[in-house]
Image (tube, rainbow, N blue to C red; front, side, top):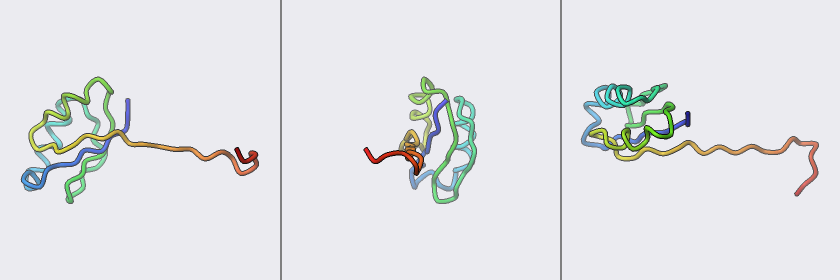
Length: 76
Protein backbone atom coordinates (compact mmCIF):
# COMPACT_ATOMS: atom_id res chain seq x y z
CA UNK A 1 0.00 0.00 0.00
CA UNK A 2 1.16 3.50 -0.80
CA UNK A 3 -0.17 6.78 0.52
CA UNK A 4 -1.66 8.88 -2.25
CA UNK A 5 -3.15 12.30 -2.88
CA UNK A 6 -5.83 12.62 -5.55
CA UNK A 7 -6.60 15.97 -7.15
CA UNK A 8 -10.13 16.36 -8.51
CA UNK A 9 -10.62 18.57 -11.55
CA UNK A 10 -12.59 21.79 -10.91
CA UNK A 11 -15.53 20.70 -13.08
CA UNK A 12 -16.18 17.72 -10.78
CA UNK A 13 -16.03 19.58 -7.44
CA UNK A 14 -19.84 19.53 -7.10
CA UNK A 15 -19.66 15.70 -7.40
CA UNK A 16 -16.70 15.28 -5.02
CA UNK A 17 -18.48 12.60 -2.97
CA UNK A 18 -19.23 10.62 -6.14
CA UNK A 19 -15.57 10.78 -7.17
CA UNK A 20 -14.55 9.53 -3.70
CA UNK A 21 -17.05 6.66 -3.98
CA UNK A 22 -15.67 5.70 -7.40
CA UNK A 23 -12.13 5.69 -5.97
CA UNK A 24 -13.28 3.44 -3.11
CA UNK A 25 -14.86 1.07 -5.64
CA UNK A 26 -11.47 0.76 -7.36
CA UNK A 27 -9.64 -0.12 -4.16
CA UNK A 28 -8.63 3.17 -2.56
CA UNK A 29 -8.94 3.47 1.20
CA UNK A 30 -10.14 7.06 1.45
CA UNK A 31 -9.01 8.86 4.60
CA UNK A 32 -10.06 12.46 3.89
CA UNK A 33 -12.19 14.26 1.33
CA UNK A 34 -11.34 17.95 1.29
CA UNK A 35 -13.85 20.38 -0.22
CA UNK A 36 -11.12 22.19 -2.16
CA UNK A 37 -10.77 19.12 -4.40
CA UNK A 38 -8.28 16.82 -2.72
CA UNK A 39 -8.82 13.24 -1.59
CA UNK A 40 -6.19 11.53 0.54
CA UNK A 41 -5.78 7.88 1.39
CA UNK A 42 -3.92 4.76 0.42
CA UNK A 43 -4.11 2.09 -2.26
CA UNK A 44 -2.20 -0.85 -3.66
CA UNK A 45 0.46 0.31 -6.08
CA UNK A 46 -0.97 -1.82 -8.89
CA UNK A 47 -4.36 -0.06 -8.58
CA UNK A 48 -3.01 3.41 -9.40
CA UNK A 49 -3.77 3.19 -13.15
CA UNK A 50 -7.41 2.32 -12.36
CA UNK A 51 -7.65 5.26 -9.95
CA UNK A 52 -6.27 7.63 -12.59
CA UNK A 53 -9.02 6.55 -14.99
CA UNK A 54 -11.87 7.63 -12.66
CA UNK A 55 -13.96 10.44 -14.15
CA UNK A 56 -13.09 13.71 -12.45
CA UNK A 57 -9.60 12.70 -11.35
CA UNK A 58 -7.02 15.23 -12.48
CA UNK A 59 -4.01 13.49 -10.92
CA UNK A 60 -2.95 10.72 -8.55
CA UNK A 61 0.32 11.36 -6.75
CA UNK A 62 2.23 9.18 -4.34
CA UNK A 63 2.93 10.91 -1.06
CA UNK A 64 6.63 11.55 -0.77
CA UNK A 65 8.23 11.15 2.59
CA UNK A 66 11.59 11.83 4.11
CA UNK A 67 13.30 10.99 7.33
CA UNK A 68 15.95 12.99 9.07
CA UNK A 69 18.71 11.18 10.92
CA UNK A 70 18.61 11.32 14.71
CA UNK A 71 20.14 14.50 16.19
CA UNK A 72 23.04 12.55 17.68
CA UNK A 73 24.17 11.23 14.27
CA UNK A 74 27.24 12.69 12.58
CA UNK A 75 26.72 15.11 9.70
CA UNK A 76 27.18 13.40 6.35
